[in-house]
Length: 468
Image: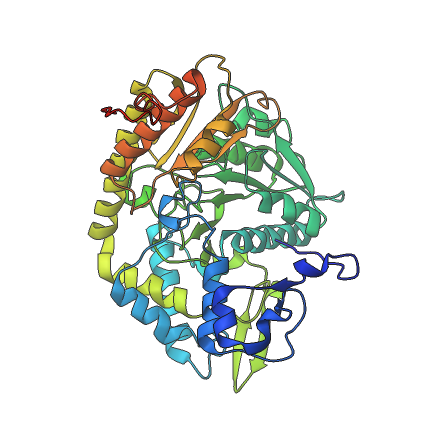
């Protein structure tokens, strides 16, 4: 997210200032001009006025609990909230000042995740990140350096992933000068395939990206098929091409709901995995994790050894400073719930997502593309042509507070408009029933010009008594 300069010279005078009832109470001269919007105010204000201004400006934001577009967790237990506030002022990079957070809590979580992803027989290592985007970029950067050090290719390095992957994959390619070989998705098979990957591979391929929960439809790439393909290239041509798993959405679900499903370090070509703590890891934003299969998968020359504030530390990150609060919150969740707790939570979320998919399907209006069976993501399209788009339906649902995204699929399927719903822990079956009812009413509104449940309008006020 970026913002641009506002030209104050061309801006209407009335738009340069905030004028509001609350601020008028606390700032005597506010009625003369107001509080500047785009410049530092000359004087401050009372904490109550400042709070009210900021609070009220956010009043038009959507309700996070009704935001079915986002994977990001929106609720934690009071004890977790308390730990967040106790650690909100700690910079995690200051390991000399806060050694327990880094050397114990951070280290413990990396070990827990490494073993959760079945890295039992390797010297895995990892780090916390600002989110999965940073984790992906760091993982891919390591693979670029490994390719460079191997001497395998002499041309421009390339990376292979589906065009339904998160935008951070494109950012990595652009920022770090790597050719992006994007595989278009098919209208019927909305993931990459081993055959499609095979057509793009050469000696300059630094990595193949597989996604557990694609951005558009929440489907899972065939990791084992691609692993077997890369094993063949390693045997035949000695091309040591790794897989990076983007498990931002699925990494805290599948180990608990499908422990026998092989997508992780059990597969030889899987060399790095990212997961979002702030999604189904159940913390607030922003927290991601990057785990390497083996210490050798992170080239030594990418690690900075820094003598900072009294102690040597190893740094592999795109930033430096970072908050401790979410790392501590992650540790709380792991200790609080354990494997049994996470399994119960994730299975419950999947049950709600499947119930929602069944309810949407029973409307008879939509073709369900993802039924929320493996990951709690529902995707559907209209069965037949109507006089309204799913985007219009999305806008209509917004009137009820629901935030449900509608968009077209990427290249090769761009004529397909879908709606996607992400089910999180706070979303219940009762809420699912209300949402589906609101979807049906919105459809009736567009088809009939009014809501199906709307009663006939009352007659005019003619002095007679009418029952409406």
